[in-house]
Length: 613
Image (tube, rainbow, N blue to C red):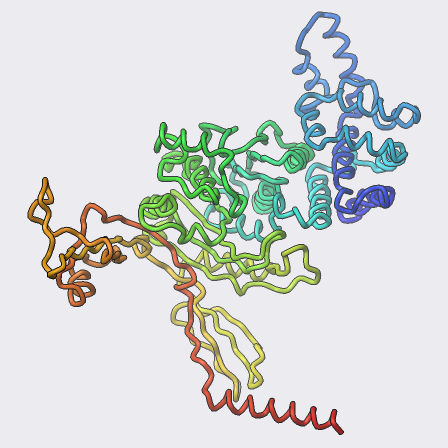
């Protein structure tokens, strides 16, 4: 049976749940039962050997037989219950208690999955609705033995079930489900310049990490991408997730694929880093947008103040209302040092980390750190309406401490906001998606690291008839008769310092009633003009400009008595993304607008006349 057919067969259990469960709750039964049936099938060949080993070791007085049981099970987990799902069907009257006992027979790391699923509550709910036996019977009829469905196929099946669950519960799906096309694009960008990893025959071992793992989609997609391009390479997966249900799904998905599930941890990444001290080759993350970090503020501020740059949050702290930049700093702290091979990572952020906060603020200091240390390779603007629970603008940041020579000292900005197609069916706020061709085009633009423009050709009626990407030096297409060609920038390269500026505090003297300048009378201010706070102003001077020349040109001609308070001078950084891609469109001629209004007015008068007649 192929993967789509098997996924549909498993999801058909929903027919039994209809009426007793809401659609958005189907996954709470189907996902844990799928995991349970798979584990049941995986352990079936060694079941008897495990039970015999348990009896032997118990009689010998061994307090921890786990290593021996895993060896007999030939897996990283085991089950010590004499029951299995088939045997449960033989005692219909006691199936509720027997199923509880069977789940408790699993090794601790597997029991943890079912506890996070809150599976015990679902067993009780199904039993009260007289559905427990029927659901169990249905799953027993589905053959998920490894000789029928291998780990890779099982992973695809489970991902399809997760997707269905996310679509049905799209009001919350964005919390733990990143659109697959966004993940594919991020994975492409992550691996595109790593020829050693992708070349077939090479056998590198690399580690990838997601601190906001959700259901594990990013880790799974990265693993599948690598398996497709180089089956000989090995990618070990690490992650952490706060939401219990998402964590259970992620950990179960890893288990079904044969991954080491102890590398997937539960908890708040910001306050309890489960992978403290570890460094990674690649990282991916889609942290929550605009979520405050007040709950972990005490712990985060303590680390910032006490550890500084020896901790994760040395460069600065963003405002409490939005913690997304804390995840950016967390990832930077996890980058494998250059001398050990370096690291590249991708993170999805909303627009505020690009420009929020003036010079000296936590946000600006974080931007200053990543730009002055030449860590930012590219920032890609995605189309709006791409995510399930928000329609706002989003951006992929790609950071690396092993930039190739052509990227050193530069940041590439790619405006991919027009790279979308309309979905056949909206899912929550998600109305748009990126096609494979559009993902490939953005990947090429990143890989080439060149400036480029997009040419849109319109016919005489104003309909778009073609769209193409123009690299530097390529000729623009010609417009048909009466048509037009619109050219807009789509990829631009900037030096790191282009985003920096110096904020100057400009003072003017305080004057008395006679118009005389008031001078200080004490200490260091004695004899010096005193500033008038009402006339105080600030000026932002690009880092590339000489401050003295700027001041003489822009300030002194208008305020000859002004001076700069050097003590208040600050360096700031911002990335005004939209400004760099803005293309001025002149308003339509008044004659054209007036003629159109006259035509519309005449049509309205004609319709009114017809109604009166």
